Image (tube, rainbow, N blue to C red; front, top):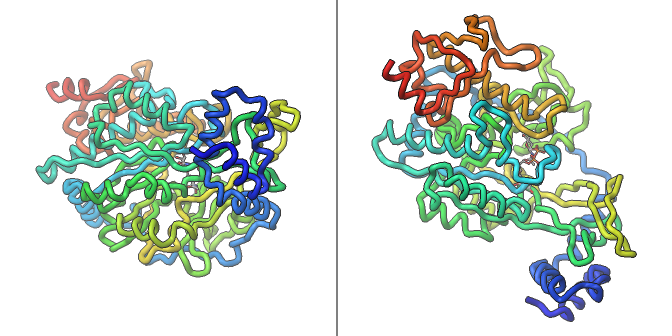
Length: 502
Ligand SMILES: CC(=O)N[C@H]1[C@@H](OP(=O)(O)OP(=O)(O)OC[C@H]2O[C@@H](n3ccc(=O)[nH]c3=O)[C@H](O)[C@@H]2O)O[C@H](CO)[C@@H](O)[C@@H]1O
């Protein structure tokens, strides 16, 4: 730990001496904690960070719109446009790689979930499914099942390691939650949690913001902080040691996420890709999803906050959106590509400016909760490595099978706990019916095939299938064909066993 004089000197040369303004008022204990925090800061880089943030916030945003073009069709694979055999080949390839322990999953879970408005990590959220499962539990059970499917097919026991990137906000509660839940039945040594870096929030004139008298306002460095975090925490070494060559990176809030999706992984591998992105057709031009496209001929995502409305609304000859490839934050990377990024490209990642309301302590020592934006948070984005890819591919999937994110609190129009819950229950109704089950609604009436999702987005019935029973609808016929089942239905392993013997 540095001494207070050393810190003072560095802060002075960075033009940030105000950080110690309340030093005389702090208790011994608070001083220790603060000094520790300041010692961890890269004080050499602080000046550049603060000046850079102020400069970036003051400059007009760089517009990419006029350089945008859609991704070339030869680099796009599609679930709907591929025949059954091709899809089966990709799935087989994915399962084969999983069975050989070559596939890992990496969860981006360092975000603060401000829009959802909860104080705990989003993965701990329970959207109100009949089973009461949280997002973390659903994800863990899908890992379980995909290992089982790969083992069943190839006869070898295998592991899909789960890397979880957290931040100062999410690490401790996530660790406790996993422990309390007995790691959801997974082997704890195959779950690796690590922390991304935090960086100071800065005022518009380039001053570090004090959150309280003895604490700087810090924020995670964006999900593109992943690449620094991989290095800081020796994650790539761990992957190498385990023989993991392919990584499926995903964001925490998509209730339909297919962990280590073998079809996606198989597709990327069979195309020889080093980097890939899953997309869905955008639902409407202003939907808050990034657009996967090319910028000056190079693959890139233009984030929803950075695209101009007229570009987002551009239509092709048949009225379709020109930029319809919506990023669902499901990425494929080879380990070798990540190694390259870590060694050569990580420092070239773009910095994005986010203007936020950052609570602070004013010069008189009063705590202030600003009503309008007062601070700059600089963020890196996980997809900003796409331009460094040598062979980038896009995989288009169906929204109803792959994407229903939890972003907002209930009471909002979209992407909230109700829409997430309904998407999952609707999917499971479809699976049950496709497997030959007849479902009865809560009044005992038979649900007809025409009973689909209502205009309010409600599923035809409450039918929830545990990922431990089925990963993507497979294996249900032997349990459900010709059976009439009352809903609400929770098809968990116990119920599956009962149905098997009926
Ligand atoms: C930059 C990015 O990827 N944007 C994508 C993200 O947007 P969106 O703005 O929704 O991104 P979020 O803020 O939800 O972050 C995405 C994921 O990154 C994690 N996170 C975020 C910040 C951070 O410092 N550390 C961290 O790990 C979050 O916990 C989350 O799992 O998801 C959308 C789909 O749902 C995509 O269309 C957007 O293109």
